[in-house]
Image (cartoon, rainbow over all chains, first blue to last red; front, side, top):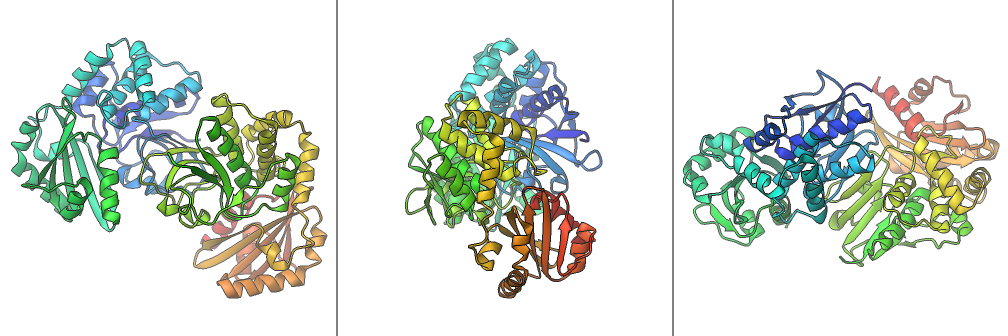
Length: 309
Length: 309
């Protein structure tokens, strides 16, 4: 087997980077020549976690084929969220907690998906199953990923398995789960020094729905007003990016991590599908979504259903 | 959760039926209201295994929605190999050992794929991981599936994990692996009461290659002569089916399960690609392929390569 590159999705969040680091370590323990890489630089939240546990950010790649033909994917499977030449390389393994779509291989492979809150929760289980050692640093980055994906267990995507894994990992990582978790999440809510474009790109994914391409960006904040003070600037950037990249519909979900609500900002068409999906009416292109914090569980399926009806 | 139907692919083989029975039993042990069903009746080989372990053939279904909305798939994932209304139901879980293609879900799910020789090998591992009891009957049907998919470990798709699982299961099932295995495989080679059309349809798949459609049927036998005594009848049926369905090239692989060789019968064009693929010359439309037993590993890739050159 040639060298194996392991990476999460584009616009990596803490799980995309943390799961890649942890899974690469597990593969190395099984004598695979694996390297964790990333399809982008860490967010401030992720950098906070890396710094805390004295880990180095994975090298950023834009293509696989110049280096190797073998890859393993974590925290994603849809090709449009992956590396540019994913369709031309050999996918040996996938560990993920998302729906499966726009994914295809020529050969049989390892695929481990579970409907839990975080990929790192599954990787924690794999370490346990293989009786592999979890170092303090690896425990720390997996813990950070779980806190990030579950918003400190407040997301409806969070399962008892995520909570259990996080508690065990916090012990190994020697941190207080609550205080470390809140400090890490807050580190990711500093939006003031970011351009509108940068903010939209922090955690954004594209989804084909019917014959449209839908872009859904999400930002965490402790102050929704701070986000919407920049509404006109954000809308202009959403329209410009849609023009450039061919998105039909662009949703920005601003999530208040303290109160577990989100406010939506929408550009493009068809807006009617958004209103149907959330049973709401947009006012000034905005709508409050009480209790919504998860793009995966509370936004994508609802919007997909609206598009398919 | 509503009732869950668990099933393997169309034209079910022993793994498609055995894995469904075993996985349904495992789900029931976890208090899921699961029922193993099938997308077709058992082959004679499968019926031999069911009879030996006093199991009942799963009920045959043609659609899910009249009964429930929740399904789990074993031994397949491609929608065109599944139940007619698969795209309209909720797939909770998949256990499989094939490539992933033509598969999509709206929601996160359990997906467990490993590149081993048989789905039942993965399900055996899951029983172990969950520390669930494996009864004699369930051990027997999982063992039968592994013997069937690996041709008693002679197929190049067989891995050490398949051999290990089969040996453990044979102990629980209280059978001698070799003698039971050979008896079961032989039960599937009774071709004498089948029409030429029925024989060609036992285990056949179509493959697009370059701009041609290639049909590849496989039958197991303990007596190649018995098959080729019917050569003219088989050729006529292959030509008639090609005419009707638009196949350009039709290959029948008759596999001698005792000696692990196959003999090929070919109709249609381009015959030259077949000769290139297997580095042979057809005589009377036939060629012996020493050591060839696996369509997936020893026929399709070679023929694909010949068509692409």
